[in-house]
Amino acid sequence: MFTANERFRTREDEVAAKVIDGEAIIINLANGTYYSMDKGGAFVWELLQQRRSVGEIADALAARYDVSSADARADVQRLMSDLLNERLIDPAGEERTGESAPPSFDQRLPYERPSLNIYRDMGDLLALDPPTPGLDSPWKDPEQTKA
Amino acid sequence: MDVEAQILLAGARTLVDEPVLASACSPAGRRVDWERVETQAAFHGVSPLLYSNLARSASSLVPPLVLQRMGERARANARHSLFLCSELVRLMRRFEACEIPAVPFKGPVLAAYAYRDVTARVFTDLDVFVPRKSMVDASRVILSQGYVSAYEGGDVAIERAVGSDGEVAYLQASHYAFYRPDGLSRIDLQWRMAERYFAFALDRKNDWQSRLSELSIGGCRIRTFSPTDTLLVLCVHGSKHHWEKLKWLCDVAELLREHGTTMDWDELARMAAEKRAERMVGLGLVLAHDLLDAAVPREALAASAAHLAVPALARELRKALFADPHRSPTKLEQAAYFLRLTDRWQERRHFAVRYVGQWIWWAIVPNSADQALVPLPGPLGFVYYLLRPLRLSLKYTALGLRWLRHKVLARA
Image (cartoon, rainbow over all chains, first blue to last red; front, side, top):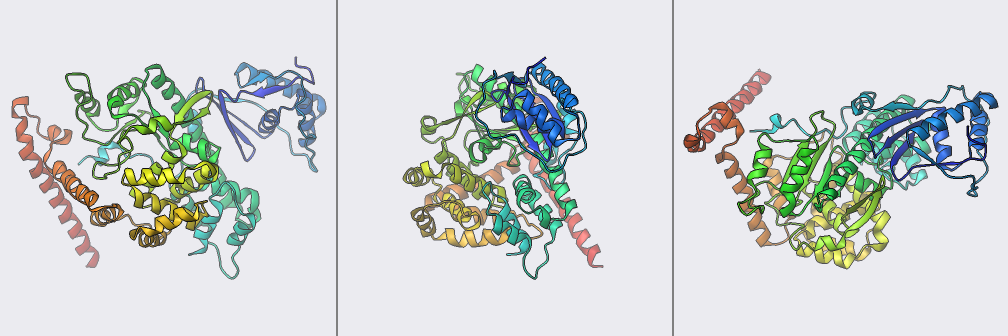
């Protein structure tokens, strides 16, 4: 169980990530495992990158999505455990980093419980959305290029 | 220039002028063909950047379905880019463990170095430079990591390059390609940076090693070319390929945006002259400046334009960049273009001899396709030198007749 003031940092020394359109795409460069989180999960990841505390993340989640504060706190606790177990985040103590006020929102979005999707086989992840024709074409089959 | 091209030029940047992009997306009295914008962005490898800027600054001006498709493509690119990033880190750790001075460039390294975001540019393979003497060792490392040679018999050819004294004796190719059997990654291992018919050779004096820059990707300290050497390499690469992809000009522009203030322009000019790449560098600078407002000093632009062929080449390439449909040059057009890229008559002579020589080599020297067609025992191997020209003559005569028949039937 993590305290409300506890903070974590994303392990930028071993993890590369990108959030696009509410989807967090994460890779652990040490072991090649891929992860994805969307909606609430991606939102939590962005707040982690800002070194928000566990309490601040739960409050922001409840402000952004249509979820009770209690459920938001429980889901954030569970997600922090998952991220720690996968070595995507590290504890960063309780020291405040002087960041700006938490974000506020006019409208709350429908809520889905955030989850960490894990892909240990690269092919499974890339099969989700294969490169479309028109992108730089991959190298040709050597058989096609041999005279 | 058509409106679709203007949208690409306005949006394919990390620092975008939002009013200019918005104006390009809603031109007065003209209609935007957004499907063409999508297709062109994908062809030119600038979809991630363009999508990011359109979504942030002009989403209301883009049809929702187009934006959705571009977003899907951007996410797919991000997944591939991050995967190739992890693959590069894995390989670089092996190279380091085996004490091989491998220098990755372009790909995720350039994305991190110039764009500050490994997912900002499209790349489908990993480029690694090694000194010539390390080529065989580097190839063995790559093969040991589950990759296979892209050319049948390539692994044998690599081992044959090592002489009896253990040193690399002969290398016919200018680079070797390897791929993962699952098709997820390809590596281009290079030691010249350009084909043998170009006089350019990055490793001519081996002084690039003293100028390497360092960056961190996933906790792995990676050494890559200095900004000056990177710019040299990008201009040579882009010029060789007719600057037919906008992303190569974006690479130049973004490199200058990120490292232009520390660029040693006198050193660049000296190296371009020494490595016989003055026109290629000049062409890259002029095009990146004219099309993407790249931060090129006035003196460097003037020096580039002073090479007589550069302004004319730049005009032609600008015109061809967004031609629709895109047409690749014929072999003859390519040869004529390569000659115009050379700086001096000595390089033109070098090019002519090597370029013609490679075709003669290709026509005469047997490969595995010849051996597969007619398996002969070792002592009769010389027969392949007679069979190959015959086989190629029959093959291309048949192709020519098929083409002629197609043309005749089409007219009928």
